[in-house]
Each structure stands twice: as structure tokens, then as C-alpha cells.
Length: 298
Length: 212
Image (cartoon, rainbow over all chains, first blue to last red; front, side, top):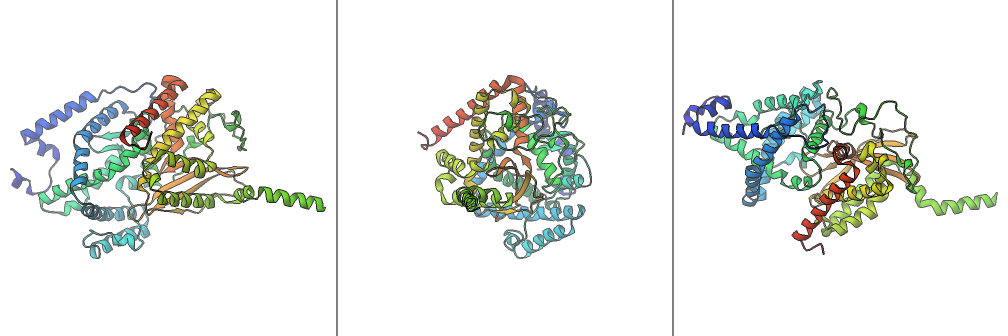
């Protein structure tokens, strides 16, 4: 093993990959798969979406991620669930959640929410001291609610628009803004404070598996919810992120007039004539169904 | 005078359930409804397991009276709704309902110690449309946002759109349906929806003895 060489500061992944023939081959295969999948065609009826100019490439990466998940991540997560007792998994989750609260607190502060920053910092202190290093989430029992803030949300709060939607290899749905935020999150990750490389890598890996395990149930709900999984996940991701930037209360989009262009109930023979408010006869042509919100809107 | 008073009393007695419903504020309705639904789910193992018949009953008897599902479907289908025949509209409502029920049935097993917390309503007295904001508070983890778009109807407030964790249902399905209609028309969408729904039904039946 070449581990001693790696003892020092983390070096760019590219270089690390390049100095090992095995890794290089794996990277080449992955790149080839990505490229070949990269020319994915759009399904019939998919309209050009202003929030997703890279749709063809994104769909390719999406398919690649799906295959990777099917082949590796999901089986590993299932095994993890089957082998590791729930108490252990819950404790691991708590530890990672506790570490996450450190960044959440910092981001709350950066977003100008000092009280929430204090509350989330309080969670870290309480859980670290009284929760045995974060193994138990006693702060929640004490009524300090958990939040999640990342640097992508902070950038959004500062006014950065999401920019084009991007599907990252392995990591999935993102945007230009959130991708940048993610890089910052990765580089300020409390796990980086660990000096021992094996512990650090081991915990990064455990966190990934643990996260995937938690998504096993949500994935069942997602089954069959979408007619086109790609656009469903994209639209849901962009809406959710926008909502998170505004802490659940985003200002309405111009197109968010949900009555635009739909025949309202009065045009139907339904007996229950519900008094609908007079629809404003908007001269603006209703946006085509596939039209996304303008990307400039945060 | 007496006659009019009597008539008024009769009317009041007759319509009092409706009147009570009409006076209930949107927030109070959502609070009552969510508590009711959560309690019923917690009390019924069959529902938690996703038994389609029991889930159907729950939705039909408890939830649907407070939903304008026709409007919800119309909005999700978007500008194409007007072009659909009444028969197609009926089918669209049926298939959409099946799809949503299946989706949410899968989540029912997760119901445990959650509680619903309403946020203050920002609305004026005369408003006919409001957004009710609430959160599902869990023993662990971040609260999950759950908002409702509601309209005033003659017999109380009706839900016509739901926001789960920041994602509005109607908006999301408008893109899904629009894409499909663009490619294959309304009949194409209907065919896809029903095939999708049927395939899951069969999958269900094969996997468990619940379905005959």
C-alpha cells in the first residue's frame, strides 16, 4: 500500500487517481461510460427547459448514476441495514447529524440568523457533552429542533441564482450554485479535522452508506410517482432548493399563478358548482406546460 | 315575524353542520383533519401496511370531502384540460387519484410519533384563496414542510394543492403531464397512467395476499 505517501494534506483526487494504474483504468471506464451515456436523447414531448440547458448531458449522467446506484450503493446500503443493528445505525446517524450541525450553525450565522445559529450551536454542545460525542441526540429531546443549512443555501440567501441544473456524477442533482456550495461544504467538513487518513476515509464512507440506507424507504415512495423520473426529480430538486433558500416560504414566481391557462371548474359539467373567484383574464399567454420558472428567480 | 324566525331556526338546525364547517378557519380545518388522519393511521395496522382497501376508505371518508380534486386534476393537466372531453376528464381524475394514493400508501408505514404544527395564517377575512402552512414535527430530524392551497366553497374550505417539503404537487405534475400530452395527446397520457397504475396493482397482488 502506498498509504504513507498519503499521510499529509489531502491532495486533489485527480492526482491520486493518476498515480495508480488500477484507479486510472477504473476512471477511464467510468469516463467512457459517462461519455457514451452522455448523448442521451430526450424523451418525446420533453420541452427545452430554461433551467436545464445541459439536459442531454444531465440525462446521461443521471442514467449512469442510476446504474451505479443499482450495482453498488443500494446493495451495500441493504447489506448495511441487514447486518448492522438499528441501535448502532441510529447512533452513527446521530454522530454524523451532530457533525452536520456544526456547518448548519455556521451557515445560519452567514445567513444572518444569529438566534438559529445559537440554537444549532447549542445542539452541538449539548449532544457532544451529554450525548456522548453525539451518539445520542439529547438536544432534540430537550426541544432544540434540528435544521439543515448548507453553503448552497447561504449563497442563495445572498442572492446567487441557482444557474443551470447539473447532475453530478455519483452525487446526483445539483446546480451551478449548489455545486459550488457543495465544494465549500466538503472543504469545511468537520471530518477533515481527523488526522488519521484511515479513520477519515472510513468515516466518509460510513456516512455515505448510512445516508443511502436512510433513503431506502423514501425510494419506495418514489417508485411509480413519476412519468419521467428525470424531469420529476429535477423539478422537485429545484423547487425544494428554492424553498430551502427561503426557509420554506419563497416569494411566488411570476408563473406561479396556478390557474393560468386551465379551464376552471365552471367549464365542467360537475354538479358541485364551486364558487371560484373570477379568474383574472390575463392577457399573458399561459406558459407552456414544460416551461420552468425563470432561472433568474432565486 | 314569528314565522320568519321559525323558518330561520329550521334553516339553522338543518344547515348547522354545514354552517359550522363554513365557519371553520382554514387553519383549524387542517389542524383537525391532520390530527384525525394521523390518529386513524396510528390506530390501524392495516392502513400502516398500506392495505389498499383501508387506505381508500380513509381517503374517501375523511380526506376527500375536504378536497376539490377536480380542480387539482385540472390544474395539473394544465391548459390541455379544456380540450379534454368530460369522459377523459373523469378518467384523468381517476388515474391521478390512483397514482397519488399509491404514492402516499407507501409512506404510511412511516407514521409514528409525528405531530402537525400549524403556522400563523396570513390572510384577510374576505380572502377566497389562502395558503395554510404547517410542519410535520418528528421526534428526530428536521420538521417536514406541509402546505396547502385552499379555496372557499359553500360548504367549507377545500384543498386543491399540496406542498410537501417545498415541492408543490400541481406544479410538478403539470410538467409531467404536459410532457406526455405534448408527445402523445390526452389519450396517450391516459393510457400511460392506467398502464402504470395497473402494473403496480398486479405487482402488489403478486407480492402479497392482500389483493384477491
